[in-house]
Image 1 (cartoon, rainbow, N blue to C red):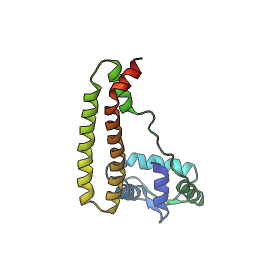
Image 2: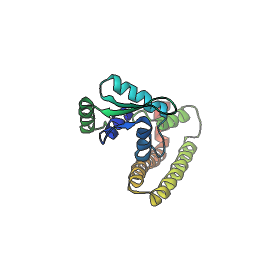
Image 3: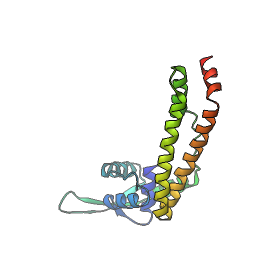
Image 4: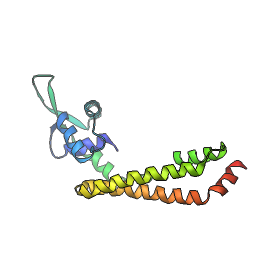
Length: 174
């Protein structure tokens, strides 16, 4: 995820302080991975340097001065272009899981056990996501569906690899 573009998009509704940006980010996108304050301020500093935001106001407080940021027209153009650009689909051709299976076969370890252990872990995570989806709002349901569909694809791969394990072993040891 592009945190800079996400923060710019959040600024389109109006100027905000870094604290408010963090809260909005966490509410919409950071349920599982909240943004750190340092990340917000370092990103805002970079966006400011690049002319994508400007300081709209500086307010004195009990602590350090509070800057309120506003998106510039260049920032709006940047977000617009980012939103219009499709994300590159990830083909997962450098899968850690595949590497582990091949290494297990090459070193004489039990690759079938590795696949079974991984299947168990995938199913455990899928149960948790399904439960979360049942109790979640629409945004939570959609993000859980996204994760579940990827995990289902992994499970299909695990089954296919299990069925072809003998042939894969012969191939990698040849």
